[in-house]
Image (cartoon, rainbow, N blue to C red):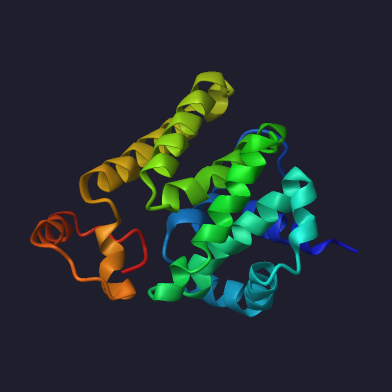
Length: 203
């Protein structure tokens, strides 16, 4: 019987790859808004998200794949399940703590490339400047050592990490979250939002 952590990873990445990147049909899930996918994840994994948040899956963190499955639940599936609401960000602190703890014990270095990208995502989603700086450094180091066939993908992730860092350096937070979180926006943030029209799928 397939373990729940493996089910999560196979759902997000697919099974038919060992190196490089998953099939493009899986990659398309990652950063596009798809209401049908949101509903599928909501149906299949909502209970698992709450179980993970409640500490019931803490034993997964003892190995790299299990820790990543927890991160996927708390950092990715949360955004699908609660898209467009404040609750989409409610699990970010737990996800970033899992990532940071995993970095300290080298779990990221034991994962294949596609997995590592999502291991670092909680830091990219954080409104902490320190986390953002760490995330960019991780992706830059990853790019320097990655296999040639995935270099373009990792380079794209470097650019996204830089984009997120730039926003936090400028505003100290992500302005696109303000409305959902009930935070008043400054005039500078409102001008930025009007200019960029980028809500990272959560507006």
